[in-house]
Length: 366
Length: 181
Image 1: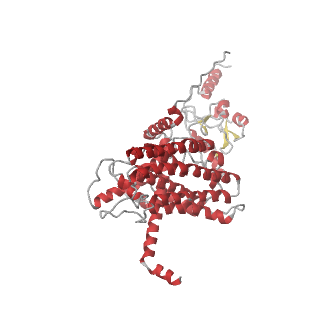
Image 2: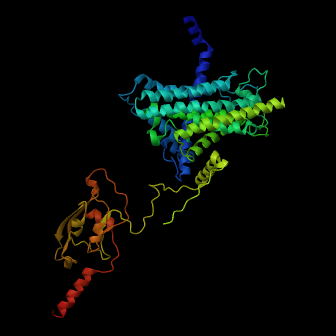
């Protein structure tokens, strides 16, 4: 055993894994931080305000043109927000169950980080896929399984807080996840029904999914599935109009009512990470992944094409995150019973009927 | 009053899916997004204060530079939160405005108490106290929030006068003295 551990620590794999892990954390954390900025800016624009445009550092402000631009765009704000969360006093309320209380934010964030490793976001000229965990052919299963674990963070947070509102938030979060996971899975099934062939051994791979969309995006072949999936990722990420676990107006702060400082920050990042994962999944499955646009060949060839592919992926991701924010500041929150009704009585039947329709279509077509 | 029954039309299929409404809502917010912001960048940009704004109460001088307050203390009596403290004083007989007889020796308005009701301005028989356009009053301790006489005149400045009440009184008295009454 000791020998095995020594071998592992001395082998290259260790550095390899930690480097990739760090990359995942850094990328996800920074996108999440800037998603918060996007949220603040877009909400400001929608409400006729300007948004954060004051934060700056003397050294950056000193740069003639760039400094002003960075300040006006609020680009230093995420750093200030992060530092605020980091340096605030972190009290441990007397009435909480301490172990779970401390564990809950970690459990909320870890699956979000973990799910990202399966995400393919480009292809090298050699044909190798740019991803953090190459060679995995169960991408979509893994991402669904792991990202759904995030709700344990919410449930444990609500339970450990030992007070009413967090508990109600946790119950709502769990119920919502179960309701929407079904419709989500069924809507995705239609897409895999279309792209996978019977004798394919990597049928559930996200890479083959993207490759199948080189010509036409899945969005145009599966509009109903895309719509159901879209609504479900909003619900899965607990975003407006489905932010039942939080719903500030009726549950104070929902599951994180009793949390403060960095623990709250972790929940915050986890929420945005779920947005990022949901958006990435939607892009990979319906919006052609790293392919530019339907019917348009990729710009350039070789390395330039790969770089453009990754850039397109991130562009689509940013656009999708903006869509999340845009919807949040447009649609008011549903009532809890409405959320349940939409999940069970609308989305689930629609997803099932859609699946049956595609079954019949392929059965007739042969 | 006749009862008017509003006909409740059943929702159409499109309305029941709720999607057209969401799209319409997204358009509304998009239109708002491309519209310029309505907010002011406060410390750099200041709002234009409309006439008749009730800001910080101030004492004013008339165009001849005479302080108008005669320390009648009506404002002190009428002030609901008792923010005004006046110590009356005499005007030196040799002064050019000696005919006014009295002026405040000290005039303090405690801005921690002031409720900006404007009753002092309303009650003033000399039109000497005005709530003007200063809306931002800050200080780091309680003493800084009390405006003394010098500060009040500095804030108030000079306002136009249509009466010149005391000059006319003086002229009238002189005329009467000349005609032997």
